Length: 79
Image: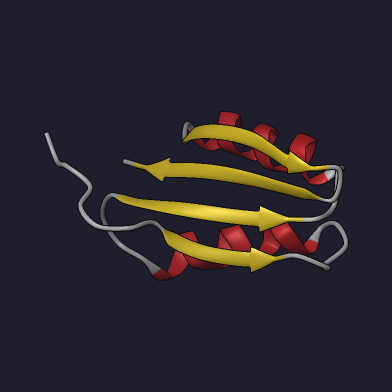
């Protein structure tokens, strides 16, 4: 079993309309290797559907948190 150490990589997509938050997440995952955590910050309420669906398809763990009406955080873990 591999264990993820350190802080998650922050992907700041605040102010970016869909589908940019998802594209930024995909780009970050593609650049890395091995197990890693990502904290995606988005202001687009529609990003929840895109991000959670992508995580399901890719078998990634995803925790969502609504910070406010205009800020949503997604903690994604690639293993």
